[in-house]
Length: 282
Image (cartoon, rainbow, N blue to C red; front, side):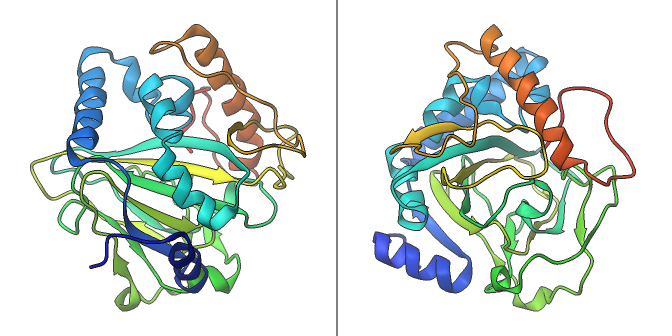
């Protein structure tokens, strides 16, 4: 499989399929070191898991650095253009022999953002394969528009509402997103995608980063936040955020709470259940 993509090929395949992978962005050793650093934090500080799923770039300098990696931004720029905002970032962690899974869904369904100028960049910090629950994409499904979803709130579903596409998905058409440590996938915000359980004895560790153009708007929540990571923001639709100077930076913790509370309006609009705490998953 080709593991080297020019910007034009990235743009072409993204337009055609709704996804592109595998794109090498980190050396294998660098990716595994990042994995070990974060798993070490989880082992040493119980707060780490609480802040692992959403807006982790506000809490951990490690994540802040990765989200601004030039190779990652080059790949995103091939799709979005030169002006890029980081809207969110979070780990998708599947422990060994874990039942956790992600149902078929579309990312943009509950984010409250208008348009489709969004790319999710998913970075493998461990091997991601079918045995440990790698993502699966349905090619071309991004062209179907936004489809109906149903909330399940299933205990082992890693999504905020346990949301699941309420139309038939052709499982046989799905492509497994197999990645080596340090490789990236890009997918469209309307891409049908899912992932299964980890049936191996090792952690599956991936970092998902959501990038948007400054022209995007939040149209459900009363306010929203993002960080400019490349180019210029001539629109000002999103309020800026600080970068963490240390793990659990007090300023970052305050920003995390502010962002999560604001985005709750969009994430849980119309939901039958809502969490009571401020550390919400996205």
